[in-house]
Amino acid sequence: MARNVYFSHGTRSEKHLLEDILIEAMKIYGHDTYYIPRKIIQMDSILNEDFLSQFDKAFKIEMYVESIDGFEGDGKLVSKFGLEIRDQITVVVSRRRWNGLIGKFGYTENSARPREGDLIYFPMTAGLFEIKWVEDKQPFFQLNNTPTFKLTCELYEYGNQNINTGVPEVDIVQQVSSQVWRAYVEFLNNEIHTLDEFCTITLPSGITGSAKFLSVAQYTNMTAASFGSLVFDDGQYHSITVGTTFTGQESGSVSTVTQLIDLSDGDVMTFPNDYVAQNSTFGIQGNNFIDFSEDNVFGEPFDF
Image (cartoon, rainbow, N blue to C red; front, side, top):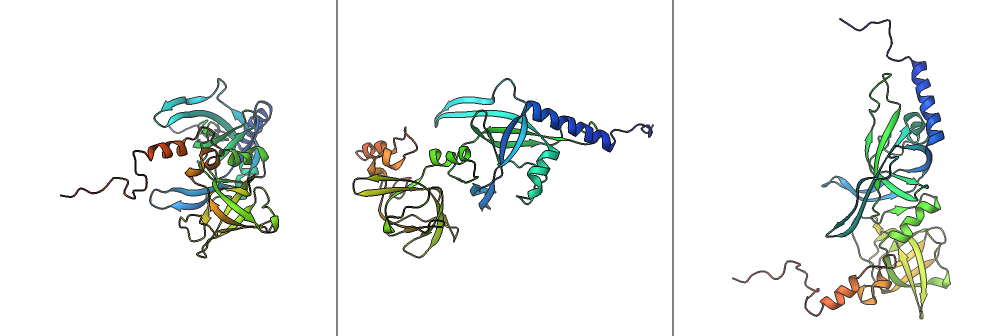
């Protein structure tokens, strides 16, 4: 027997009422967060993953934290790669609010819902989380609609992406976490690049690209500059060499690389954002019994 046609599974007014109640509850019991969409700069067509991405927008929106008993996930793990923190959190956001504040801007090809890979910043915990899964069918069509998105997020592991959202507490992540490119430079007319501005790279070969200027430090008769990820216009990987110039896109200041900073300069100089790095120490001590200059990492071929 068919369903009774005189009873509805939800009228338009009932659906709007439910959404209004959910939005009001989130505004009362939720937390203000920043939704940060990911912009893919280069895509790996073989592995179907982003080779290089950046985050240049942040949208403020309220979300309800469903993980009321604390962080979920695997927590803190000690693996062969060191300490890994895999804290997870589950949040709920109104579909109507997300579409009105974020989705309507069409920041991706398919912006009908939040996307995996986007970031969420929680000022409450000063944590930056990456969306791992978007559940868009809970609750399951109680009124023939799904008024919310449920986002499963994991603590973000920074991978040298460019972050320039305009929110200081978010943008600081790149400055304190990135494995930067370091080099001794000479500034033309002593005009230093503006902090966090993008600089145009020009290699001696004429190849151009861009990088974000992160910091500068003065040492004895030398000036060391730090830059973020290097992106070149031809889409290929290139190394910075002596004679490379950086031109500030905002300030117009020009700097020229006079000397490269490598492992021989010590861990503090090479990795200013990683106080536990021992790459230089291991490399220098390992030179006593390992030849790191060998191009073939698998050793010399057997001579039969």
